[in-house]
Length: 327
Length: 272
Picture 1 (tube, rainbow over the protein chains, first blue to last red):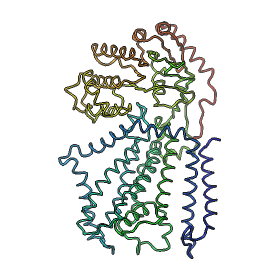
Picture 2 (cartoon, one colour):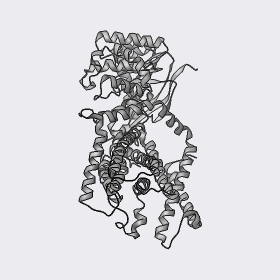
Picture 3 (tube, rainbow over the protein chains, first blue to last red):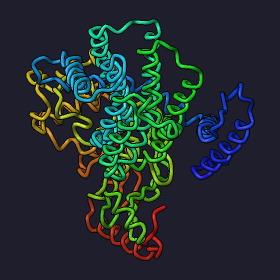
Picture 4 (tube, rainbow over the protein chains, first blue to last red):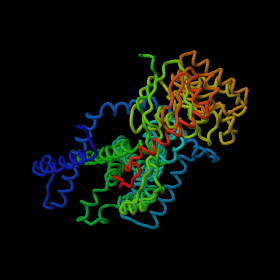
């Protein structure tokens, strides 16, 4: 039986419903406290079941199409030099004609951070301990997502000349773009650390785990970029819509304001559906609050990242053969 | 039959030519609701099959619009055929147009490495053949000049030098002997002959029948997407060179197309 999109959608929905039914009756010790408010609890269970269903379908697809998928993955081995050169190119050409050259890659985020730090510390005041670090940590993770999607959305369109003439696995373009942003995040992180030291924040061993939320965000962004870059070939309007949407997402994520006292308790379940909220909070727990996120936070982050990657790569693979006719 | 390197089985390629290009989401939704998206089907290739053996130079001949470039793009993997299949063994380097995959913002040196990487060659491997490429292209004095400042001929030379230096198993050459001066053309054909004797298979596309006759053993003649003749280069050249006969064949194909025109072939359809 072939796995068509329709069948996969049906299987996913059926699995979600059945998982939901199973999870809702599980004892509290397994799924966490139920509380009095069902509104608070239901989204959590719904989320869990969707993730579980997705992962099951993903495994199914992997089994059904393992030949195709492994050939795609092996292709990466052949094209790894191209990937490396493309990342290097993006990086080198960015500051090529400027006087300070590569120093800009750390100076740029540092100056930006200083400006924003000043603006937010003196113009908008929130009652948060060490506000600069609070703000910049959110900014770092959200900026990564924002930059990679904004650049990545055009990754197919911009490489039209190559796609039209040589066979190269097409997913290499979104992957290169998001990886470039990852390199930028590394430099932004160095700038963040400078601010961290200047403001006299405490170091704690949990900071060693910081790569984890960055990896989650990377996988999540990659999925989004694969989805967007394949859609934008067919509908060029997407890039403008996305610009608005990502700004909306910025204000829905606690980057510059604290969650407590800003978001009414009743709206928290809906507010918590925003994936960026979880990635940002994960990062802050490690860097600011010196706690290791619990299993539940990890599951939410992995769930969002995997779901994004599954949907993104599926849509991408489905549509990639038709890119050429629309470019 | 282990020395068949390229096997093309009943390949057909269809393009949907939209009557008016829809690029906006709003436009798409509006048109879809009104069921106004109309496609005209166009078969660029119809049931083409042939196979190429190892170490052969195979010619593809045809007038403009015969489907030659589409065929090459399918073989090189750029297009996926609507019907049929392609089987291939080995590395392939397509020279569909000169300077394939070159970035005008890069220097010649960066472009060489980038191009090599597209063919799956590591920077270290490219280090080894960099000198050879520059020697062949005779572009040493321009090695750090950005490619946008190159003349067409210079870019062509560079493109040819890279593609032939990476030593692919299969080389696809689309109308590239037209560019470059007489001296360079001779150098190119000498190099291709050298590569063939080294075991490389080549697909040569041209409408220059003398070149095909001179370089290839076997060839295929495409006309309006159909394989009109598949045989030795001389046989193909005979048909291709005889203008009266060629015109007749095309006429017949046109007639056939009108007769076979299924009413559903050109239809307004809702896009799913």
